[in-house]
Image (cartoon, rainbow, N blue to C red):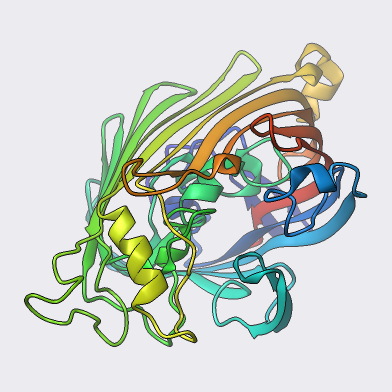
Length: 439
């Protein structure tokens, strides 16, 4: 496979670990599939462990009655957000397969959840997706470096975080908050993908199963719409995504990505009632556009993203979700906004680059800062009410220490700024992550 990024290898006791580190520019769609020369089988993965103390209330009414919860005690969360196994095989003659199995938050099982939109009611839930997920499983035929066809389940590379979501591709302990709030993250779906590389460009176009408007909501915009509560993904409607990466000079990459598709009447059973019915003409068009870049030069790493999304018929969808679904139907009852936005930039400098002994050992120590602005609910002002607590800014500052290229130890202080009538949300987090290939 033709790689743009240089892979780093460490061999010990006959076992070879290959990593695509933070200093590489390999997309998530490609990093799952890395083979050492002469090897057909590839096994690898990544994981991150996070320990957090939040210095703000976790009460379900903290936004509806902020003054009453200003002095509430903070809370801590220890978590394993992601533990991923890659398994790939090159059959030869251009045929290959790859898979990615992810264990989220420690694995599968039942969970007790407090429902914010149901007066804080406690519910026992068993989730099909979200605890153990098959994020990729595709079969590929490669005709040439510029022409590759994949069929199966793969990453939808819209936005910086989806395209580069492994833990060594961002400085913060958790994935960047803005894109992870308004978009499915990691966004993965089933369909057909055509991709390739030509010169300084990597490009990809995909046709996938459409999003489900009944799973959109105020707090996460279209994020839930890529999932499915059923044993299959409903595909009454289809979505189309694309991405173009331009590797301008060594260490500098620019990316454009987007998505378009209809989301209404994409549930089971098909809820389109026929001509003249109340919601027959509601299409729920979803359009997302995103720009991102990565700069890795002169001991600096700088990353940035800008995402903007549009949902047609947002007010009608919000009404339909509330009134046109059974009480026990798999639908989100909260309204969904007409638009959503996420902006983010982070920069880090490798302090160890100034010390030859540490530099020669390939140890790195980045001091970084990050700023984000995002809003998951920008309403149709003529037909929808405002919820100002969805409009947020966040700053984070901290360090990333790489004792070896495949492992990062992270620490950060972050502060989430809400509108003045709400309480700000500061926190401290530490984490450790690895990313690499064992075979």
